[in-house]
Structures are given as structure tokens and as C-alpha cells.
Amino acid sequence: MSFKEKLKAYREKAGSARGEPNRLAGEWATNATTREQVDAGLKAQGLDADSIMSESFVDTIGNIAAIDKLLASAEHRRNMALREIERRRFVVGHALRQMSDQIIEGEAPLVPATE
Image (cartoon, rainbow, N blue to C red; front, side, top):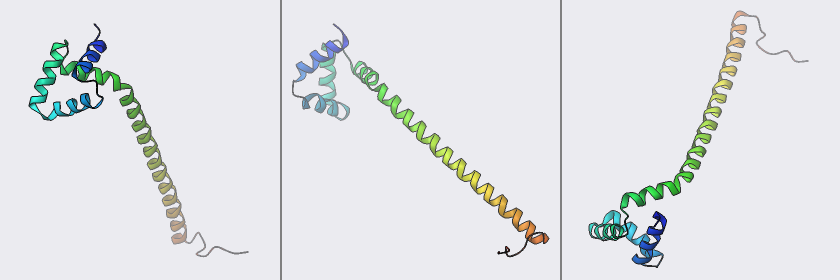
């Protein structure tokens, strides 16, 4: 019997109501009595909590990878925006310094000539 077939059989035995497995899963993490009951039921089916966790991880790894890719893309866009801000700030700062130096040296008019 495959892992998924064992898990399905355990779920059917534990209760066919959709809320029952979710309730048991939530209580398994917080209630020692429920944990013992669930672990005993899993063991009777040839399963354990680690196998359930492993299967859940395998089922959701695609979602985790997609989220990681989105985060990396957002971080790259943020870094590029910050780099562009720094570059523009440098260019404007450099131009202002040159103009200031020209004014101080008397090489540029204080007021631009108008036509």
C-alpha cells in the first residue's frame, strides 16, 4: 500500500468529515492527549508524524520555490531602484560641484544670460 493510500485510509478511519483531520492536526501540535491518539492511529496505519510532515513538504515545495523566486525578483528590483537613485544623486551632485567651482573661479556667470 502506497503512502498516499495509507494516509487516505487513516483519514477515512479518523473521520470522513473534512473538519476532523484539520481539528486533529491543530490539536496534535498543542494537546498531548490528542498527539498520543493521532500518533497511535498513524502507527496503526504504518505512518508517523515525520512521514506526514515530509509528504506535506514535498507537496508544498513548488509553492515555496515560487515564493522564493518572487522574493528574489522583488529584492533585485529594489536593489536596481536604489542603485539608480544613487547614480542620479551622484550625477546631480557632481554637476552642482562643477558649476559651483566654475562660479567660485569666476569662469561662469552668476546669472545665466537671457536672450
